[in-house]
Amino acid sequence: MTALRLLILFFVVRTSWCLVKKVPVQFGRVCAFGDFNGDSNTDILVQRGANLTVLLQDNELLNVLEEGVFKNFTTFRVGDETVECSLGDFNGDTKLDVL
Image 1 (cartoon, rainbow, N blue to C red):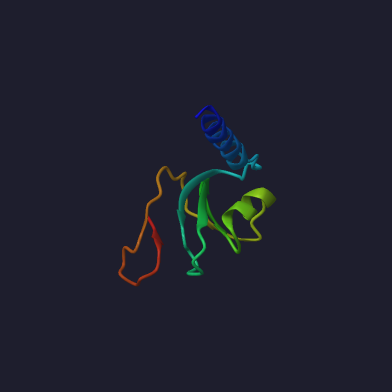
Image 2: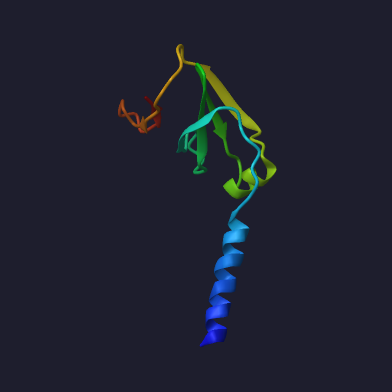
C-alpha cells in the first residue's frame, strides 16, 4: 500500500510540474476566450487601454503558450478604456459578437 501511495504522489507532483509553464506576458489583460474566426480553435481577446486585440490560434493552445507567439492578430480601437467584455451571438447571425 505504501508503494501505491508513493506512485500516486509521484504522478500528482509530476503532472502538476508538467502543467506549469513559463509563458511570456502578452500585452494587456485577457478579456475572453472564444472561436472568433470559426476554425474550431480557441482564440483570445485581449484588452489594453482603448484597444481590443483578437489573438487567433492556428494550432494547439499549449504549443502557442510554449512559443509565446500568436502569428495572426487583429486590433480594434474601441474608444475609452474598456472595463468588461462579454461574448455571445447578440444579433442572431450565428457568429460570436463582443459586447
